[in-house]
Image (cartoon, rainbow, N blue to C red; front, side, top):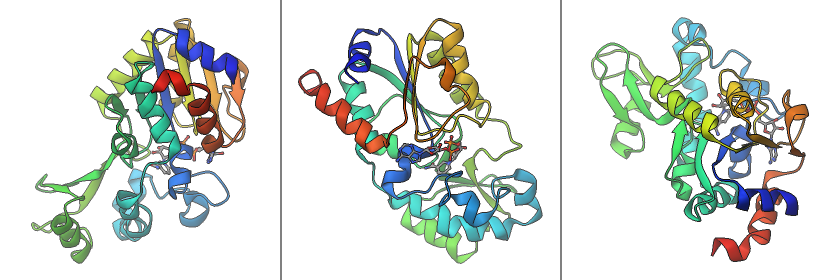
Length: 246
Ligand code: CNA
């Protein structure tokens, strides 16, 4: 941990890639753990073909699995990353998460490569709904996610089988390629093209550090692998860098 903190202080361009595990301590389940969303709703809940075939199945999931994300609060992992950015140590956070918790914690440079659950669009008339707005959220819940024109409304998140938001991914790729230290936190690193980002970083000579409970396919390329709880990890970072961060 001390060596890693030294590395943080001496690196010139540090970038973090976060996954669902980072939001588990905020009460949002991940996909692949035994208590994750897949175990409860099935592997295909985020498949785009399945959404078009059976939108109400997705909407039933959304009421229980997506809408509550909006009231979740950032945890020590989000706060630790925001503090590193404020101290000038971290250039930016690339996130696969759709819950907006990095921004809530105060992170400014965030690339949301899988979109955000805050915005929903009508697939017929393209009307935009801000779901954090109480009136708009209540309207969509009352119509079971049908627009005022009758069209289906879809969250602005990337389903499996869809293109990623081009601008956000281009920004993330640029950060990865510019980094000299690339840290992944709470991601199983099996979802592509997100899992390609650490590889771009490695190819450009960056060091890779992985923080995740459980194995990832990139563990053997990592300078350090911390197989520990992210809350414990973040508390240790804050403790070790205490004077540096305040
Ligand atoms: P994943 O495949 O579910 O992997 C999460 C990883 O985090 C697993 O390997 C867990 O073991 C690990 N983990 C969970 N809790 C902790 C903890 N407390 N400490 C350390 N490690 C932990 O998730 P990925 O992000 O890799 O998969 C990518 C998908 C998941 C993306 O498309 C996300 O959009 C999607 N997702 C996002 C959210 C969210 O926005 N919060 C929630 C669920 C899924």
